[in-house]
Image 1 (cartoon, one colour):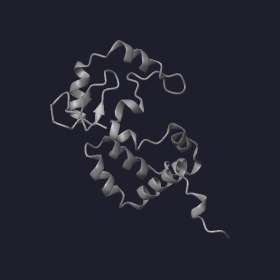
Image 2 (tube, helix red, strand yellow):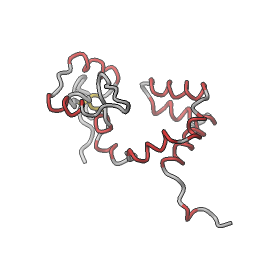
Image 3 (cartoon, rainbow, N blue to C red):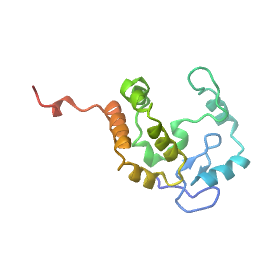
Image 4 (cartoon, rainbow, N blue to C red):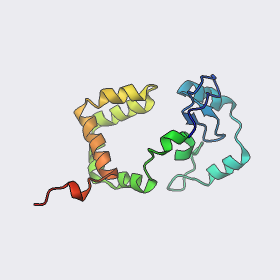
Length: 151
């Protein structure tokens, strides 16, 4: 496996954690993403392939994304298979948790944060956020039966 690449926008060595979904250029942060987006010139083959990945329901996004577009090689080993992720959308328990406006605000704040890692550490002290994370983990990786004591 290779290490992180240099950012194609600011040149920070080994900092590029993300890839442009249109042209696969490497960048390191939200500001670099915005700068790149202004001057992005997609490769024709990649653009056609991305167009074939329409979101469910037939709606076409302005810039289609896939997991491969945003993960580096090192992160791909931690990737959860799509089949398991689909279980999240089918969970009543998770839907009930997401009805909580406070939890939705926490998730929105994490999504918009530049330093997601430190914010996640902070939010993992919040019982509601821990309940959400535990629920997601139970759905994606159900406990193995061998760890459950017989009745």
